[in-house]
Image 1 (cartoon, rainbow, N blue to C red):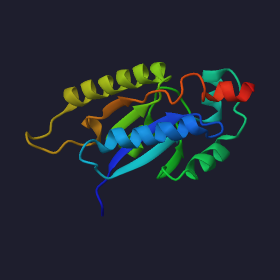
Image 2: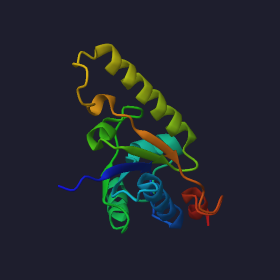
Image 3: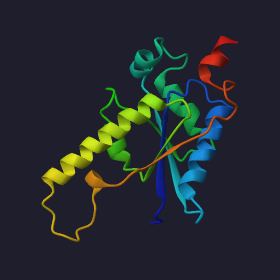
Image 4: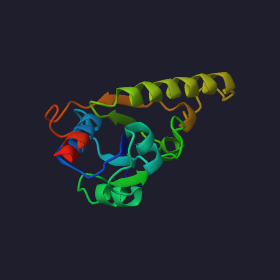
Length: 164
């Protein structure tokens, strides 16, 4: 089986637009690095109830349709639904990514995930009774964090497109 670096991006993706496609391109480029490693892009699509909590309104497209729209994108290897609860990151544990890339406007999500990762690492260190030299497991994997740049700042944000 081919060993690929796995990168994850998060979003609501209520209609995929050029800004989202640019996020996918940037995420892949950042994960590949200078060595042009083989990379798998996994997109975690926010659930309807999470989208409503974060944005104060229901998405135009239902969550299953948003997953289908994202999955059709040629750069995306897989699209999956996110957690039903904020800040749990169970789906991230299941994907077991090497890299997470945040969109330029995902400050709060990045802070929340960094906090979750720090707690997880502290728990792994406290509970670690592995023999020295044992391989790192999912629980203490060092996930790289990247931030994408805006495609065209203020132009392709979903909320702006829906207003027009």
